[in-house]
Every structure is written in C-alpha cells, then in structure tokens.
Length: 395
Ligand SMILES: NC(=O)c1ccc[n+]([C@@H]2O[C@H](COP(=O)([O-])OP(=O)(O)OC[C@H]3O[C@@H](n4cnc5c(N)ncnc54)[C@H](O)[C@@H]3O)[C@@H](O)[C@H]2O)c1
Image (cartoon, rainbow, N blue to C red):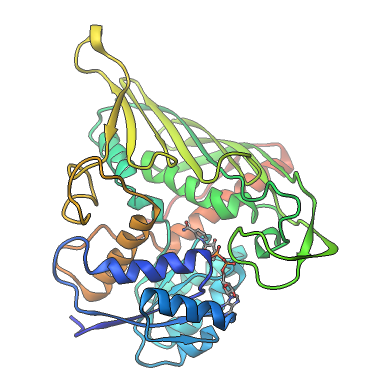
C-alpha cells in the first residue's frame, strides 16, 4: 500500500468543487485502511477559480492548466472535471504520466474518443473510473438491494426521468454544454446518469425505440467571460446556435423483458435536479426522487392485505453507505449530493490503495462508453423511426 496518495482536481467549476471537497472527506467515511490523502493541487485555466478552490478546500496549490498536473510527478490520482471534449486528451496524458483517473460523465465528447478511452483502460496501467455519483445514493442502493433480493417480484416496468430547469432562461449563456451534435445535450449531460441508473437497478438494456429529441431554445447569447456550471453570466448581444437537444424521450426494452420509459430535459421549469424513477414488479414497487434524497417509498406484499400500501422509508444507518460512514450515524439526519461525491472519491482511493474492505468499485470507462452507446442508439431511433438494438454490456 502507498504511504500516501496525492490527489489533484482538474476543473474548479461546478462539479470540480464537489470533487475537491470529496477528497477532503474521503478518509473519514467507511472503514480504516486508507493511507493519508495529500490534497496536492486544483487546476483550471481560470486561475482565480482554481485559487479559490484551493483556498476553500485546503489544497496546497492552484495550477493554471491540466498539463501542469500531468507534469507533476508527486501527484498520484486525478479527477477530470472539465467540459466533455477535453476528457480524452487529459485522460491519455495523465495515464501516460502514471496517474490514476476518475473522469466525469459523459465519458467523452465523441464515440471515437470514448472508445479510445476504453482502449486506454484495457491496457491496465492505472485505476480508471467514471463519475456516476448517483450509484452512491443510500436510498437508490437500498432499492437495488430490494430488487436483487426479489422483494418486488419479477420486474415489469421502469419509468425513469431526469428533469432539470437549468436551461429555461433564454438569456442563459451559450456555454460548452450547448455545443456538440444531437445526443450531447440533455441526454449526454443528465441522461447519462439516469440511463446508468436504469441499468444499475434493472440490468442491461437490449434495445431502445421511439427516440424524440427537441431543442426548445435554438439560440442563446454568447458569454462575455467565464461561465461556471449552469450559472447566469454577462452575455453579448450576439447570439449563437444551440447544437444539441434540450429535451429527449425514449422507450427501452431490457434483456429481462422489462419495458421502460426514459425522459430527460434541461428546460423543465421548477425541477432544479429532478432525477427520479418508479420501478414496478409483480409483487412490489419502489420510487425515488432526488429532491427528497434522504427517503424512498416502497410498496410490497407485506404486512397483510388490509393494511398494505406505500411506505416511506427514511435513510439511516441500516442502508448502504450511511452505515459506518456518515458522521452522525443516526436515522433521519438527511443526506445529499456531496456525500455521493465523497463515497465515490473514497471508492476510487480504496481501489488505488488496495484497501482490504473497499466500498463497491466505481463504474469504469467501459460503463461510460456503454451509456454513450445507448444514447447513440436513441439518436438513431429518433432519426430512423425504428427500434435500435444495443450491444451487450461489458463483461
Ligand atoms: N456527476 C455530476 O453530478 C456532475 C454535475 C455537473 C457536471 N458534471 C460533469 O463535470 C464536468 C464539468 O462540468 P461543470 O459543470 O463542472 O463545468 P464548468 O463549466 O462549471 O467547469 C469546467 C471548468 O473547466 C475549466 N477548464 C476549461 N478548459 C480547461 C483546461 N484546458 N484546463 C483546465 N481547466 C479548464 C473551466 O475554466 C471551468 O472552470 C462535465 O463533464 C460535466 O458533465 C458532473
């Protein structure tokens, strides 16, 4: 086991800060066994942002470029948290320099880049992972346990959604999120999460059909300076084209026979981060909504028919991740987005350190490519009006 692990975060924007905060906490959740974590650097072309991140989260230094991270031999493990088109070149340089990589979703800005990253992963030179942080929700993990234990019976149908409102304002700046072909908009940005969730809960998708992709706000003003995440920013009077979908819907058939609907939107007013789903089986059902992340509902064949109905389950130490990890290990104290990043960072570090009792591994680059293959199939189904088979999942 290494004596310490030195970490860096590339990108100090919206999600970069979550990664930076997560490494700070990672050693405090789950069991013992991690070596000390050195918070080495935060890098961003916007140096002031990197400096602010380094100050807030206690990192030793701020760097002005991702190249400076690749060139620093003292850094062992890096999160890539910049726009998707940059993921591949940065991952290749980092792995080439002997570093482990946790890359944000979607895996890459194109299918070719995603496939190249999976090739890189197959070389086995480093730990490589993708940031599907919702896998770390205690409530979602608990629902998965119910499903795996057969408590909902044979699964019949899933209705999954990720509705957000970050793109409702037509004066919102034309950031990198609105560039790239169809499939790289709401589907790539938030659809990647809910597609991964669908398969995490219910197993592999076999085919998709009925894809419908639409742009509600076709032009947006050009930003005059840096844009952070979904934030408003000063904009020019000049407008540019939105190149990818604001909203998408499709149906899916799973290999098990389960029939599903998926819908994603970044223009759904009043839904800041509406990831949710309802999953039904022959003898039970469960529902989750991220706006209430510390609870879920379940309805199953107990206790007896005259009192049967939906029960609300409050997250607590009886659930995955919360147990042995959350600072106040008591039911009902809540849990949220940041904890998901912390458990994700911990799992990445567990794998690097070879901890004896690790958290479940993060999803891999191959899992990231798979979500992109499903998104590509949705785009084809929208174009051709036909069902499109999805390749078998990675072994
Ligand atoms: N898992 C999640 O819940 C989640 C949430 C949001 C974003 N993301 C993902 O995280 C990534 C970043 O998204 P974001 O919303 O944080 O973006 P953002 O635009 O807020 O931040 C990106 C940062 O990258 C910096 N940057 C750009 N080019 C750079 C370069 N060459 N070298 C170093 N820094 C550079 C920018 O200055 C910016 O500060 C995306 O892949 C996105 O899909 C994941």
